[in-house]
Figure: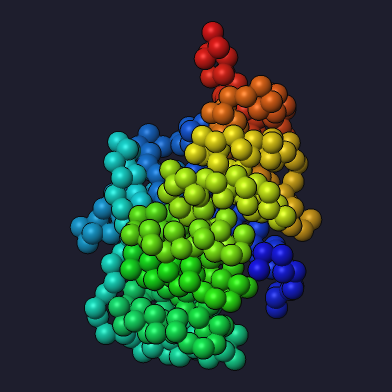
Length: 347
């Protein structure tokens, strides 16, 4: 649950884990200006991760073995299918890299991991779920789908997390359907939150039925999460974002809804975006995490400059003018770029 402040074994709060895990998820696609500033290679491309993050890379290409690689920080790295779901080459062509389920026999490590997931006394179940996810095995998915019918809600929650980690269309559709129909409200909120880690796969698979069911959930937090995952032109999702999202008691949901609305060209959360652009720090980070916090803050505010420019209101322009004085160079540059195009459009 987002507001649960219990600490894990490392002393990190659940809210801090949410910020670390989902802050990048919630900032989504960056503004064009940021990409121009970040791209230094002559042959630039871009990758889209399962959780919605985008990253500029150099010279993406497919090897003779059918694997995608790209240059990053002077090194050629592998682009793991499922973790990376789209590769965009230097000409703008998109290649979807969502893996298919394998019919190969389940290896012993994955088989053991499945048993660990189902053992509610096992506290290392997330590591086991990651092992199962890497298998991409159809037999693993079948076992996890069977767990969705378990009487123990903890087992059902773990099964959804593991299905998401399989990173295939079939497993993600099953995870969406399970989260949408879960009866226990706390468990449903936790399941829905897991889906944000595969939001880019959700929008590229046939999860329509599950999404529509989730939009009708009794819990407002669940409705907002499914609205964030729904297609941009879904009228019910837009209504939920405007009402339940922008008006939510938790700032994570309010801010996520405001960004999602602005990406859809809706100014329903503009006042929230302006507040986000004016803040100097992200909530939930400890003093020792300043560098990480500022990196996330900069990415968030760079996008907000572009979103406010697209909404083109007088109040938004005032906020972007102020952002030109940001201590964060990429934010100041993004604000300047937005204002330059604002001026050109008014000439």
